[in-house]
Length: 222
Image 1 (tube, rainbow, N blue to C red):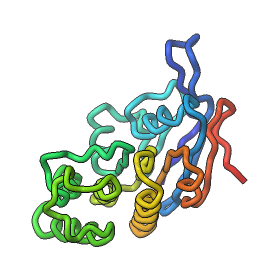
Image 2: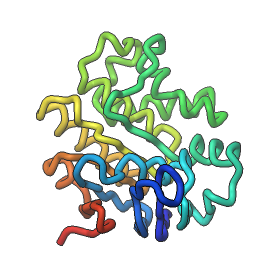
Image 3: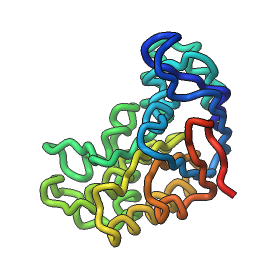
């Protein structure tokens, strides 16, 4: 599903600060992994490279057989829209859209409408335990509820790859546990490959494998 091979990234030119050096990772459908590491070691940079938002200085990111570096900006944008899902710490829900319309946004962007879109939104509302909040606006939800909406939105179009960047960083422990349970269950159900970037050992423990990113590279914890 995803192959990351020998990624290297530096800022400030060849003599600048090297953030990543020879990072490699392979994920298959249904695999859910965590990446941990101290602040400043390049976790956000790695996610940006995987998403095609930045270009590596060396190495490659291949999603479902497609090398992101070989695509133009429009191609990478289309690939992100169709085959990737994102969950952020700050939720990033559109405040003027209802819960149902926020969840359905990736479907609309990918040309799915009508009964098929409505059915998918209903399925996800049930999966994240928000059946009665379809018509609510984000400001009417708790932080945990907003993050569950964000998880549902990320998975609405059944992406091949889900990238979750500190999705429980703003939540209390009870809400965080529920969001992590929903995220894992839906990733497994949809057979998506998923990467969770987190500082939380409890969050990382919900994944299949844990990797540590450091100046020495990316190493699996044993």
